[in-house]
Image (cartoon, rainbow, N blue to C red):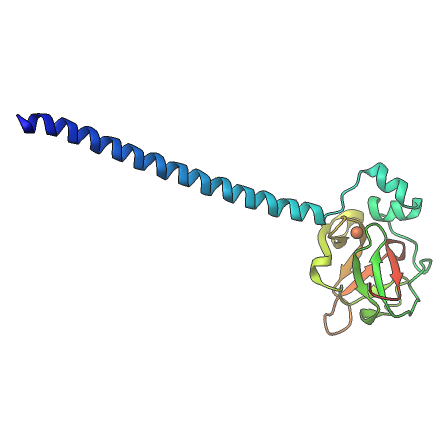
Length: 180
Ligand code: FE
């Protein structure tokens, strides 16, 4: 008799406990998941806030027509016409669009091409590169990683220690004597 009463009761209690345990576990997992999502969202926001994204009209408003043409339209200034191709000041060259520090005068050299040339950026994360197949050639385009401004191209005929030649438009740069 007792067995008949106990067994269904015990079964009921057991099922309730299992159910409760599963519900707790699920709640815990979803809390962890939403925690991870919040963390990911936060990381994404940090990356986005580091990017300088403006509309075409905003850039047009901020830049001279030549600066806009070169940096936002992937243009090229005529050789030997830019402000910095023969410039020897000591300091830092910043992006004309967003002010990010891109190249140091310590890595500038005279390539004889008529464009300011550097054998290395200030740090690898300051620039990004893309394959450029325009004008029936394959070149490597150099862009500002912060605002995606077109800066110039990089070639593999530079001096030691890197053997690279970052051939950059003067108009995409803004020289600053002191590093802020
Ligand atoms: Fe920039």
